[in-house]
Image (cartoon, rainbow, N blue to C red; front, top):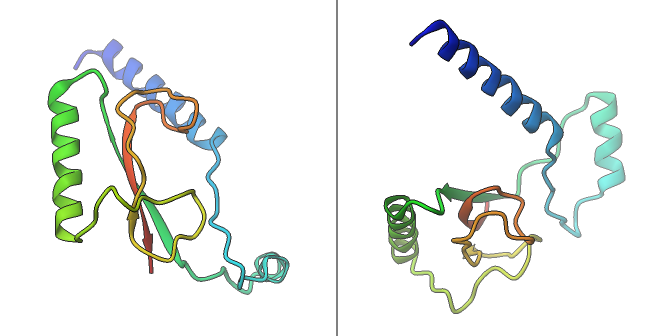
Length: 126
């Protein structure tokens, strides 16, 4: 790798780190969690609330057929393994109370997605 390629890679890393810093995630709302009480515990250093679920997203390149094929094949295998169907998808980003799949996006940059590339995702309760 040439010196200029190293500089370009470093510059890209700095830009990506900046974008990660500027981006924000979202918490899943749980009715039984007293958010003000946990905020106070966080401020006083007493700890953080326990994780109750995850959102897992698989991102893939929307204009590369191999990438799309592999990502959707992985999605199908995941769904088959856990006996999931598209008949009962996750209905929003809040707590679902069950393992479910979000409708997938094969177009990058759609208005309802925070991702800049195609993705499929799932809700995983603990």
